[in-house]
Length: 433
Image (cartoon, rainbow, N blue to C red; front, side):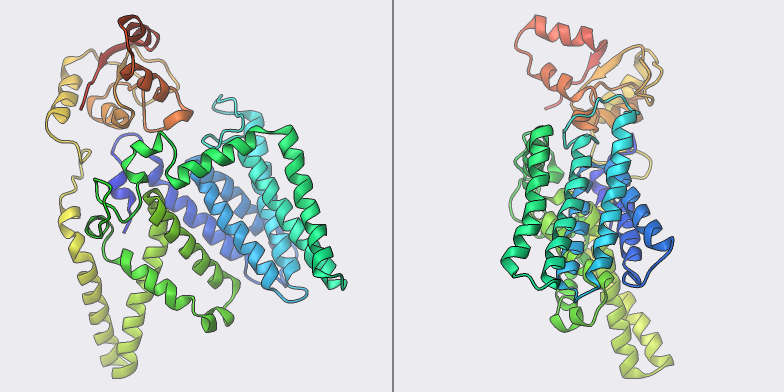
């Protein structure tokens, strides 16, 4: 079940709406590139990996955290190279280099053009040179692995071969440490976001660990209510799919599903923000579970009767697994933002009817007549319900408003307070506990 239903507020299209789709396209293209990887030739051998690299770049346009999906693809390529016998690793190496080469090329063009005038530096939280370097270093890592394997094929010792590969990787890191020292600061900041140490993201409820309630305490009921019991089925399905016998007789696409599933599960347990994409694994594992019920029942009872009973049992199982979440989803409104009731809702509708009409409240690249100052998470509600431009929005530090909003609420004297209002042309502000 899509977790973004309860983390996305109606208003501006939030990135949670697009992340699962972008990740699904990226993962699908990658698995497609793995087909006939040792025998593919001609245009296909380059086109599908190049499209995968382009999809990888597009995924970070929706959300910069999608660089983690790059890491999963890079890790799988690395493992497939190491686990392949003589010869086949060349196909995985070429596939990976094309993917990350295309991602790097796309990032280079974007940073060069700078279509949104954000002046990209090395910040992990905006599409920047940081992502170009990530792609280049990943490709360099695959090249280093290929060199190691090639030297081993020549009969060199493990230690000497390792030195060849490590030399390539060390040289790449040293070069970027000299020309782009800010990149490594971005790595540190990104690690803080993933691990929950970032000051800003710590204030966002969806960044807490998955198995916790609204107060941050361990809870199974809270994720069950919003994510359905299929969330708890997925780890058991992944465990069965990870059995050595199954992995040994499977293809690279199968092993990628297993690896990505475990990676997404672990990320979600540490930081519930990543459940938006883990829902892809939950849905697939749920399908495998229900299909297994159908197949077992059909195999025991025979053709027609077995098929009918199998479908019935699968539907019943699905209903049982979905039922605990029914009260939550039944309460979702369809015409306006939910999780916003009482005084704030009334305030926004009053603002819509009682304040001067403005233009461009859904066109942030144009300057409106005035703005409304409020906490950043209210931005979508203000634009959708009050139909007024909000200074701060859900788009975070990479857009104007977040810093200004924080400074506004932390102002310690009247002059500082008024300066912020004047600079941002604020006519109204909303104070909310």
